[in-house]
Length: 330
Ligand code: SAM
Ligand code: SF4
Image 1: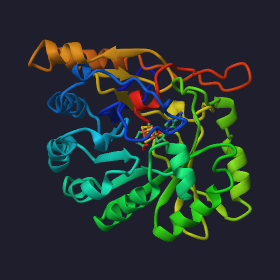
Image 2 (image 1 turned 180 degrees about the vertical axis):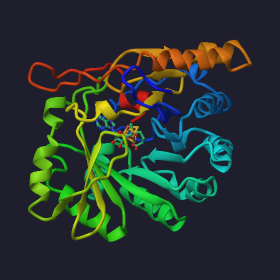
Image 3 (image 1 turned 90 degrees about the vertical axis):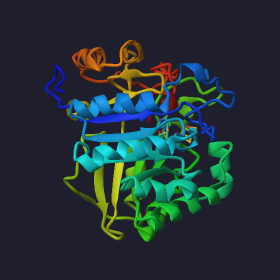
């Protein structure tokens, strides 16, 4: 699949549920309204959709959400999708998780051919962790990370930089990741979805400032490592681990964007930061053959926009796109 700007679309991220057992302050409001179960694609339908994308040349699938590992029966989807790894049609099957269910699922994920997991941890202070996630318990997540490592999974830690919350801790986290052999990615907060009382402008911490702060403690060496995604990587000389910076508010990654995102209702978003979307559930359900579905996917890719329009400044404190990250899948 090649879009109008010549970009090869080889990466599909799938939000398998919009639900979550946490309520991170930058991601959700405390009283989130979730989608009615009837609107959600079954695991079999998700498999069929993912497989259609694999048939069209997608080489990498990432399961995300919401919290993917709280969806009932989710391991069935991993088990069935692992056939594409075995056949060689797919290079990678991965998952982004808050880690709360990893002790339960790490071994089976590894058995399904998953090699890497991203675990989101914004602080190593247990009290602060519960403040940020509202409902999360850090020890449980750390047990999950340990279980993943023990199962042979490579763990990358994702941390969202939050002004006045974890800015002073990110340096310590770089050290912790180094000690445990995890790469790390620091994410700039994005204006997605109404999150209640919290003010985006208050949370927003530009990564240029984070980088300057980290350089006091660490030597950050430029490296030529790209994933086609929005992260720019350096190597932390003292630990040898990679450290990525995701700055969604700058446009420096759109030209190499290789991904599209599918929601748990079968809506395909061609860009994280744009409202335009394609409904794939109707063609999926209309026929047992994939003909209409494949045509709808191709048509959607032909509309992939050049880039996003995110802004956070004093005049734009509301969400740039109304849907939450948990819907599109971060
Ligand atoms: N529940 C899983 C987790 O937390 O990793 C997967 C879904 S979550 C939406 C994916 C990633 O998006 C997490 O690393 C989370 O920190 C990040 N995220 C959520 N809302 C965000 C926002 N408004 N700005 C930047 N990153 C966000
Ligand atoms: Fe849940 Fe992940 Fe959003 Fe936190 S960031 S509320 S863990 S979906």
